[in-house]
Image (tube, rainbow, N blue to C red; front, top):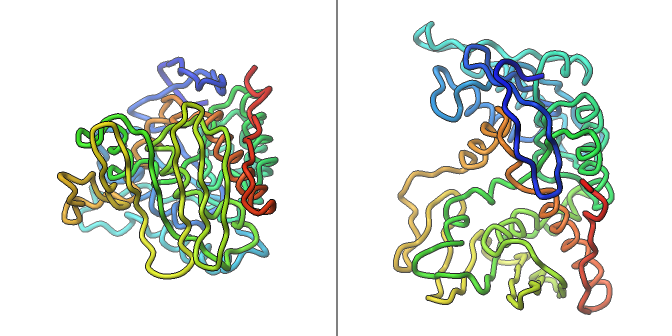
Length: 358
C-alpha cells in the first residue's frame, strides 16, 4: 500500500479502481519494473529517478526490477541485457556525491518485486506475457501501468481490465504518441476548431513478430483517438502491398482514417479537418503547427508527455485513459482484421467492455 496521507481516487467511466492511495514526500512511492526488454523501462525511469526531482516527478522512484524477457520474442535476451546494464548504471556515478540516487535492485521473482514496491510498470516487449504478469500484480492490489500494447489480443485485454475492475485496482495502458503535443494539441487547435475528421498515417511493419501483428498500428490508432476521441461504430479495411488503410465511422457521422505505410517514406503525423480550417498535425515529439508550419526546432519531448501522466498516476492520480476507450481501440483493430478477411466489408465494432465495472 502506498503510504501516508490517504487520497480517494476518481475512477474511470468503467469504475476501475477505487483503492485508497497514500503519498508521502519524505518516502517516495516505490515503483517496480516487471520485464525490462522494452526500452521504455529505461526511458521512463530516467524521468522518475532524476536526482533532486521536482514538480510532478518528485515523490516517486523506481526501486526494483524483475529482469525477465521472452523465450521466443526476437532479440529479447539481447535487449534485456542492454537495458539492465543501463538501469543498473543510471545516475550512479555523479560528479557531485549529493546527486547520487539509490541503485535499482534486480530481483528474482514477481513475488519478490511485489514485496518491494507500491506500484508496478510492465515493460515486457512480448504482449502475450502481459495477462499472466498483470494477474499477479492486480491480485496483489498494486497500481499498474502496462506499456503498449496492453495485450496481444482482445481476449487478453478484456481479461486484464476485467480483473482490474474486480480487484478495484487502477490499471491502464497507452502509447506515448497519445501525449505528444503535436497530436494532443490538435483537438482544440484554434486554426482547426471542432474536429470533424482526421487522416492519420504512420509505419506498418510488414514482417512484425507474431506477438506484435495484431497491435502493430497501435501508435497511429491512439493518435487517431487522441484527436477524434472515442465513439467508433464501424470500420472498413483495405490491404495492399503498399498500405494498410482503415476507415472508421464515428457514431456522430464523423470519419477518420489510418494509413499504415508499408512502402516508401515513413512519417508519423496526420491531417486534421475542422469547422474552422484544415491543418497538418505536428510530428511525434514536437508541438502543434502554427499557420501550417510544423515546428521541428522546439523542445523535443518524446517520452516526457507520457512520463508525466505516469508519475501523476503512480502517486495516486486517476487512470488517464479509460478501460472503455482502450477496449474500443481493441474492438476497432478486431473489426479491421475481420473487414480485411471479407475484402473490405463494413464491420461493426463489438462492445468488448460489456460487463466490466458494472
